[in-house]
Image (cartoon, rainbow, N blue to C red; front, top):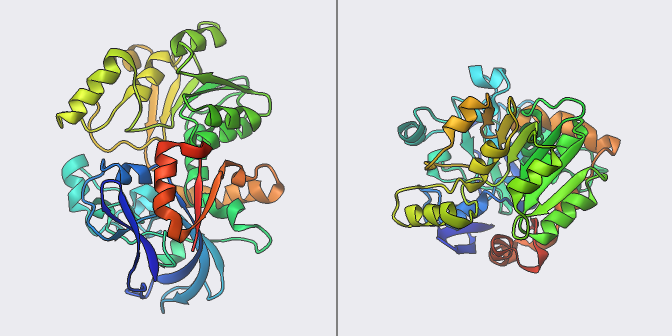
Length: 391
């Protein structure tokens, strides 16, 4: 089969690789009908995630048709149309039974690697390095789905792939980020980063009752999208032309936002002295992640507020403003998304017509064009906000 394979920094190729096979009676094989390139895939493309190996198959946003099931699979049948959550979760451990699927104890066969880095290991993820299980990803013609009874969600035939694909990751990720803010009627929130996850965080905050959302980015197309679909309740700030601190202060009457969402993560583009500091420290291998967006969110968040972090971080951030967080009594909520927890409920939102998630797609490419898609998405050329791939 054809698959998108990582070979080195900025070196992604479409290669012929062996078809996946059933390795465990709880596995299923899915013929991929649509996949996508995620913003967190760009961290692999840019070389910021260790334990990648040449030839690894990328991708953790995928859906398709079940074509084979293991002897122990009970919830799926051949021919089912399913969306695959990026989190691989057993469904039986203590974390899974509490709905904390991204913390599954049983799905990461390489748990010893993140245990050395983080003290404990998260779940396995598709196509996201050997630290997270070394699983083949879904940017391919077929994908093996472990723990098939506790992962894929069957979706109605009448809903197009584009409409349901993002239940695999970015829609639940944006929703979890907004839900973690514990929004009350009349709340104002600020979202750093208006890429795909930021767009869904904005939409989810509006679904959950936020009165206004302040959207912060430096890419005009992203800000325009946030305002276009913002139901008249989104105020866009272009940080290249605006003093964000001053603008947020003015827009909130000096109180600061009730909650802030960092949808940027480890590759945020800081400005001024701190931006240069991050670049130098990173070049010298003294810092792994650039924390400009997170620092700003903590400093601008209102007293007693929440800073929710769906943006991916992998290692160390310097000059973390712990004093501001402590003295303002902030709550920090971070973590990979518990996708299975949210998929059925968000599917209902789609079925009711509350949201059409396909609004974020700007580029629909063939699988063969994936290398071009990665470059377009990373460099934000041609107004690129979200790329889907069709095998």
